[in-house]
Amino acid sequence: MNLGNNDEENNRAKALYYYNEIKNGTYSENFDKYILINIFETGIKYGNIDESDIDFILNELDSETSKFDKYSLMSGLKLVSDASLRIKVLEKFSKDIEADFNLNDVEYQNLKIDLLTNWASEDYYLCFTFVRDHWNDYFKEQYLNDNYSLIYLIKNIYSKSKSDDEHSQEIASWIDMIDEKGKKINLEDEIIENDHNNDNLENEENDDDPIILWLKEHY
Image (cartoon, rainbow, N blue to C red):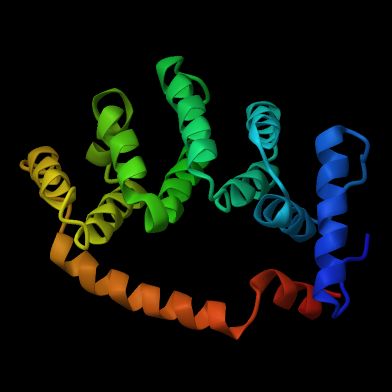
């Protein structure tokens, strides 16, 4: 499969075509791993997605054994922007926690935390309530085991909340409570780091579409 030409619109159309073929079960070619990421990211970002797309990706995640294929699917989920679809994803993750399903797959669980970190940039309170509601039955153990991705997520949620008077104190008080003994979460350091990272991200996004850049470099 060749997605690599300089016509961004054509590349996008091809990726959307293959995404729909994969979703409908009518395409079985083994894709290059980076092309597969592009297909799922493009399908979610530019496709007219609905609950059926979320069901498809979540079902694939449940049955997939390849670490990279799971990464590709989760890369697509990061680009879900509709609030109701994000809630649907988190409802499935909640059921997984309650059923103790796939929780021993550490890399997959960290991908979920990375997903929350990504979403927190736009909907930090949704991500906060998910972590808070599953703190005792899931996240607390990871916190005690020094899961840096989780600690970074919590710091990022706090950083985003600072511009919102409605929830910032609630989140700060919760962090003080869960971190009272461990003292693992240094909020002030993270604020500085977050500002720096956000500046870098803005610069990267202004350079070019990363999907198109990769295609130009590899094809």
